[in-house]
Image (cartoon, rainbow, N blue to C red; front, side, top):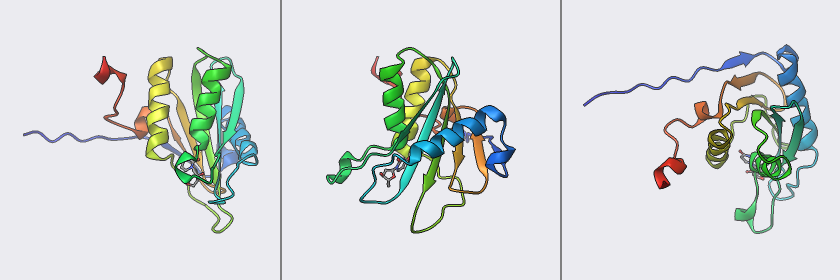
Length: 161
Ligand code: THU
């Protein structure tokens, strides 16, 4: 028997203003994207924005449905849009932010498990690490160097080949 220990390193910035320029710009884009959230059921707005290797950015927001399981998370909305609009263009970073009208979120909201899976597969497909930048409505910002940091031991297409 062996014990394996996993460690994940990430950076903590005290505020949006403290971020490097490229990360701050992307997080601001995610915050703008959040305004397009369609969330009449949860009232929980999520905005995500991706940066491509060519420097372009694209934003997306969560998109709910009265048939609740059909709700689409912001991360999945933007990653699917990115693959459709700019096929083959690697994504170097994703920023995610949230807004809850019932309770201001002052801590970074981490992507759900399903979104981590999609981030992880996009990363494997693009052969490019995706920086993950997380902030609540206010407060500190967490930065992970790659999406797989958020989903160690992930399931992937390799298992199916
Ligand atoms: N949501 C996201 O957009 N991303 C996540 O990672 C977690 C949850 C959305 C789905 C739903 O519209 C709302 O937040 C509440 O769960």
